[in-house]
Image (tube, rainbow over all chains, first blue to last red; front, side, top):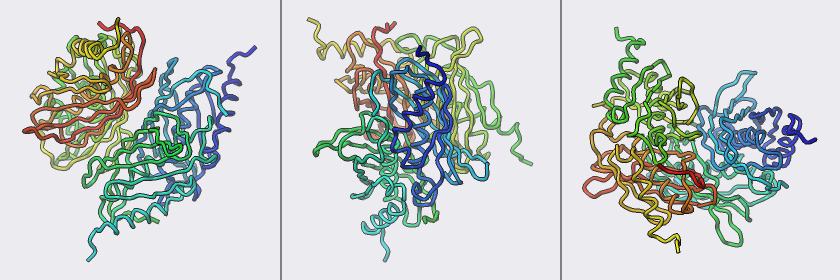
Length: 147
Length: 147
Length: 147
Length: 147
């Protein structure tokens, strides 16, 4: 009965996200998961700032990496895990504003490797400004147990 | 009399690091700063883990980015700030062990751009295993005030 | 009277392309230049192949780099030159087919740095397949003379 | 008695290089192959220049990609082929001088993925200047036939 239904992949991905302590630490949430897509939000709060009062570029990288990785996981087999092989970020504007939104999207899904990209936007008063751009390689690993 | 002495650059860089709330959040410290080099340590604790119990790849990215950035800052003029333009991480082994050490090093320092690289090691019982490799472009910005 | 008209930027960019011997060597042409955009075509011929008979990944990189760079040049001041600071390619499918098309597009244009991206497609019988994805950082240099 | 002797891997890698038409096109040679390492040389000639008279950044990328890829191939099984998944180049100085040398080196060799890095030097009167820095992900593919 276990079809890989929309419900299945979404529940799998959300359960994995919940186990990522680092996402909780920075107060990130994942309000949206679709086939080949995921979205992560993080409020701008003092704890994640760098020395100019913007959100730290490494935090921007964290949510971009995670959004791309979970976009990939939606297309991986049920019993498989995904690991980041590499990612590359361009930080094109300061990560300022009230919150950040990272949108991850699969570009090409192979059996072993999945290529994703992500964009991160800084949101102020409902207006989004692109602040980062990412390309990423994800590896699909069979039977690697999560916590 | 204000030569850019070893004392000067080291104090400047350490003061900037202290203003990075995100570094405190993940419990990172910067025990070593030299001309063109910096080292950041972070203990492996539950709050920075991902779903397999390893340190989150985004955290690995954060400390690599920061180590490379401060390596660059040691070579920037006294009144200048440094901003990350882009970075690229290869995660070559799980970030496991008792602590992580990121070593950032300047490859080429120009007036406007500084190219750095970093390696991140997972340390267990004093033994270091390479877990990540980074290349990075840093921009030197005159007169950008820190907090 | 020298407005930076459409005619101006297009002529400037095309003149620069003509001076790129390496583009002639691989038989590349640039049929399209618009504000923030450029397109480079290269036929699939034996001289640019790698060991499996596909177009060499480095050639794919060359046309992606060049397409992104000239997209950036369309937004640079008249007397300025553009230099590639860095680029990152993901090769997502073999570069096979009758010809390759690289489409470069500016993501964010600053005074000193311009961030571009490019996609490369392999074309067979009019059908395009994505074979590469690039992110790139370009530096605007005032008064650097071309040949 | 086909051990994977030094002779074997070197002959395999050199035979593969010979099939890369694109390497012949740009007049590149591979004078050195060792376990986990390869070196590619290309003379500075007019046909590979860009608009300022330097060697084209894409050519620099080609030889860095190829040097890293063949460094990886020395560690792959006899019947396996290697494909570039992605690479990232920082161009840190103009590729000027009499010739370029690309040195590729394996950082971490897994069964499916091999991570390499490369440096490219511009040589003038025997003096080497670093002009580019690369990180790269290579995939090992079983039984993929070369030409």
